[in-house]
Image 1 (cartoon, rainbow, N blue to C red):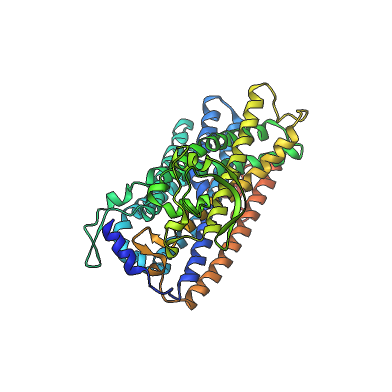
Image 2: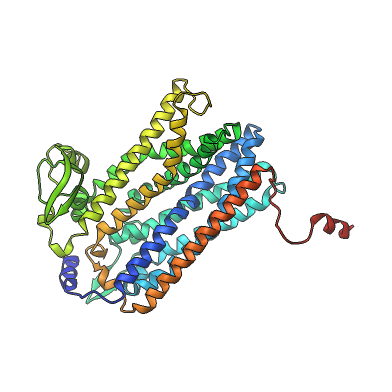
Length: 472
């Protein structure tokens, strides 16, 4: 850490380069857009696997119909996510030349594994889609296993990079040069496990609540048949388990911050000065150095952050001003994530407790069923908001460091600005067009499925009957 402290001092007076602002805006747009699709790429294959397994082992044709439809939806989202993921891979070098130029050797291994995982998932998704009616059922079901595993591997690889940026290790700096690179140590850094689990579980929350929200909306319109009930129950079960696990994982992840990133923890807790015991501050803003409009709950800050009734939370007054993150953004994003996550966990708890006590809230005549379905519809977009808020809290809370304690974000950015603003504008148009295209395609698929058109033939090309006649 002595070496890192020395680098901190040397970097303190670096002026902001011209490319910093457009690079930040571009990265926020790309990551904020891609991370939602990534959640479906990670969690959807496992849900399809469970649904397909139910269809094969319980001889349930409706489950097989849902598995087949979900796979087609997954393919659409995967294709769009591939575009934004490719854009992101180029952006790392384009937007942050200082980071990749200096630490490319350190970060190469997890990026390589992420690329391999992506292509393997694409290959097996293609085999699975092509395999309906062509591959024996049980062998066809097995095609989903590598899809689920590559989703885990890809998530771990990406989070290994982010974990390293928060917990840099696996290298030395000698005379200003990066040397003694150990990419395995960098990949399996001290923070990767909990960050991976936090994001992996969040992916199931986003995908599970979003898919369940679609079927909940259908049930509110009167379609409370078995198709909608099963389509709601399976993803909602995944999301429920994830929502109930997430507070424990988040707590274990956050409890490391007192030792590893006290500035981020102080911003999370809105702790302007070190207090023992520390209160939990709900809401509030930092205005002219003072906390206003917060609701303070005594002791709870120490309990949540330090697993103690009396342990202090280090205050912002002990941290140099130029090493503090944007406090209000970090605090509000963190509290939004926790608040929405808590509400989603309560929703899941209410539904399953009611079901355990014999109250099926999905029946049309069920008392309280309508409000539950409305809440389930809202849970989909709320899970996405919680995901985005959590990512903002993590990334903004690490500022002003791109590699914590080693390299400031200002050092990582380049000096080109005009070109980056054009790239940002083009990316915004591209993402907007892909969003509109995805919505139109998915709505068209849903409409044709409701009309009983399962095969979804191509709107152009030779008619298969005529091709068969010519063959004969």
